[in-house]
Image (spheres, rainbow, N blue to C red):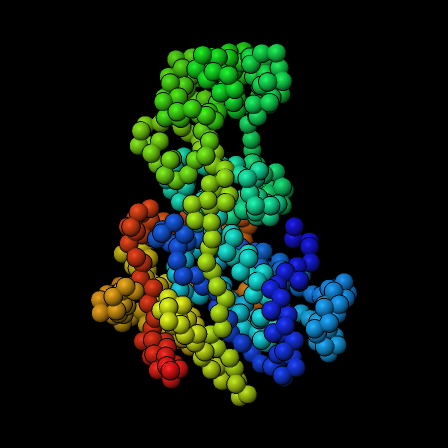
Length: 480
C-alpha cells in the first residue's frame, strides 16, 4: 500500500501543464491552492475530514523513477529539459490542513498547498483521491454510528469495496468515523484498526451437524465465539444449538462473553425472540450481532422497533457509501505570488454561482460558545487576519446574507495546522485511536440540529468582511 511509488498517479494534463510552466519560466512562481468541497454527501449537515495521513505518505515518497521518465519520453510530448527536471523532482513547499477527524463544511479550505506551481499542480490528483475517498467513508461511517445510538458498529465491507485500496483504506476511514472495528485483517496489520469476525455459513455446512460446528468453534475460540445461527433455521435449530454449545463448552470455563449473529430474515422480530431465548437459557451476557445490507436508516428503524441488537455489522452500504458515493472535493488556485513576493488573489468565475471560488491565501477559524462549548460558526479570513475574541463578532447566514448573528462570549480556534514547511514534515500524525477519539469529541461539539439526517440546520460558514470585499472586487473586475 504505502510503499508503492505513486508519482505517476496524476491526471495527464498535470504533466503537460508542468512542462508548459517550465518552458514559460513559471516553475519558480509560487501558487496557492485550496482543497474544499461544495456539498455534504446524503444531504447531511457536515462531513468528516480524513485521508491526511495518506497525503503525507504520498508527499514524502514523491519522486520520478527512471521507468517513469522512460515512459514520458516515449510519449514524444515532453522536452528533455522537462524530463531532466523531473529526475530531481521533490516537493519543497508548504501544506496546511485540518486534522483528520475534524467536522468540515462546504466551501471552506480543508487543505492548502503553497508551492512552486509545478509542484503544486502535480500533486492535485493524489491529494484529492486521498481526501475525497476517506472523507466520504468517514462521513458515512459517522452517520451510521450515530444512528446506532451507542451500539457498536463493525465495518464488514471488504468483499464489496471498489478494489484493495477501497477496502483497506476505507476501513481505516470508517474507524475514524466511529466504527469499533473492521473485518479487514490487512487494515489491522497496517493501521492498527481492530479486526474481528464471526464465521461463514460454509463453516456450519462443512460439519455433519450445526451443533458440531458450533461446539468445535467454541472449543477453538472460547473467548471470541460468535456463532452464525441462520444457516438453516434461526429459532428452531440455530439458537438452540448455539445455547447448547455455549453451555457445554464455555460456561464450564467460566466464559460468559459470547455472541450470536443474525444475517438474514426479519432482524427486528428475530432479535427479540433470540434475546428471550438467551435470557431464559441463563445467557444474559450473550450479545446479538446483526448484519445484512444495513445502513443508518435501517439501523434507526430497527432501534425504533425495539430490536435487541447489540452490534451492527455494516458492509457494502458503508464501504462504498452506496447512497451517495462521491465526495466532491476540488482543488482550485486561490492566489499567486508576484515578483516581489506579494500575494495576488485569484478567482474562478462561473455562471453557476456555486462554482465561483473564494480567492486569496486564507485562514479558517471555528468559533465556539464559551458557555456550552458548542461550535457556533466557521469564518474564512484572509491569512493575516485575527479574530478579536474580546469584541462582539458578527457573522452572516450562508443562505441569507441579510441575516446576521452576533457572537459575544466565544473562543476562536484556527482549524488548519502546518503539515509541511519548505518540503519538510513538521506534523506528527496521531495514532489512529487518537484520531477516532478526536472525531467523536469534535462531533459532540456540534448542535444536534446540525446532526439531523433529514433537513439538518445549515451551519454558518462566513467570509470575513475583508475577504468578502476582495472577492466582490475581483468579481467586478472580471465581469464581462
